[in-house]
Image 1 (cartoon, chains in turn red, cyan):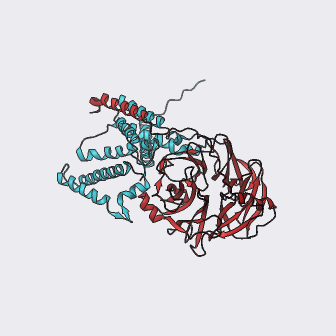
Image 2 (cartoon, chains in turn red, yellow):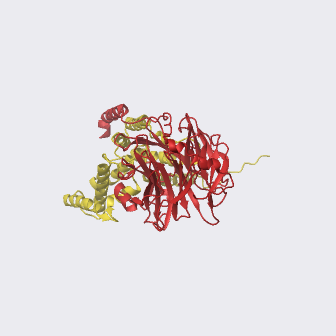
Image 3 (tube, rainbow over the protein chains, first blue to last red):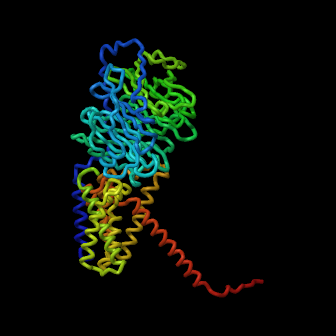
Length: 394
Length: 219
């Protein structure tokens, strides 16, 4: 049959290829436009806030869930802070769910936790088996749409993760159905997320993600939002030829430059830094930045005065302390700052930083795997911090 | 699922494959080939099986939970393998099978194992390039069809499915190869290679002279 219709099949192939090549609905794979400048709508009273401010609070109530971990925080366009974390009987348990809570400007107490998704809801929305849910990140895009990218696992451990997207048109009060992203050729497993993205002026979102199955390396997920608040298209790129580097965190440095800091799972146990001079499209090799890293997540933020604020575990092993550091030279050298938490045998980990519209810095982190701690401070407190000083609540 | 035609595609593919598999099982059990009642019964059983709730979701959702992007060559290969047992007509010739199996083994090995080289080359990333994916599939189809190889029809089907975004993935390579297809092709290649090697050794052994070569003495 084929011999008789060979010319017909060849003609159909050429026609299909020509039609497909003319299809303009597919986006190209091109470098992003310049980064969106971080909006700094600082209130006059906050700008004049020369008095050091340091406050601590709890994001989730005591005994809300036996275990809580993996928090992320973002400043919403309306001025609220929105935090997300996962909680349940233990990490990876079937009863783990993602929760959000919000902090209104000027208030000290977080709203009661709101369950966003658990494995049953995710399975129903994604129409497939979901064994557990995990890390999530929340952020607002340049149009005010709030995004949540979160991890689900269908088979295996965390290295069997896949990423899913939810969006919210009302600043995180209600969420769309989950959408699965296909990011890996091998059964779409092993894509994980931890830290916040960079935004570009062409509307794209550059989200740092990472791969964990067999070999571990950082990747960059480029999301293009559609006008209706869904994902129009997405692309993923590997970033570094080096392995054992995960959980990249990105810091826009101004212009086309971006700094990436990485968690080190190798025996070197040193936080790594890489640079991009084309808005996060290509990256330098990751070099040791002089600070230790006990195989734990870090986060960083560019302050209004251009310095970079880092939060990290200041040890080669264990996560028994959480410390701030400041860099005035784009992450090349770091000046150790105040210790936020320190207790022998305890765990303080997975920090996440956000800057409020009033210029105050918000930090959330896992507190002894039981609760999510929130710390709020201003630049006056930070400027006053000496390296050996421990933070004291106001 | 992400909307569009992918849920319909998945349902049709799952249903067709299962129906063929049931028919094949029927013929294996000596039920009359081409029996209308058997075909209708299997079709009904397929529909029922696909929608049997198991763990809170239909059975076909389970299949796609673990293999979310079945490639078109794999689906074609399954159907081509099942059809001769039903209709008695071989869809693929040996040359078609050789090309399909070789393609699956080579492309899968390169796509899934090249990240281990950590060379900085990211093959999967090139699958996001629409033009690269389209012209690669078209070139594969044209080359196969030009040589009269029926596997070309499956590459053409991949191109059409890609343009229609029939799968959840938007990466062109996912339409050409998937891990299950790769493992099947790799296994068949290894088995065939081992058989070929054994046959070659047997031929060499048989061709040897039963007597040792005479020793030539030189003074």
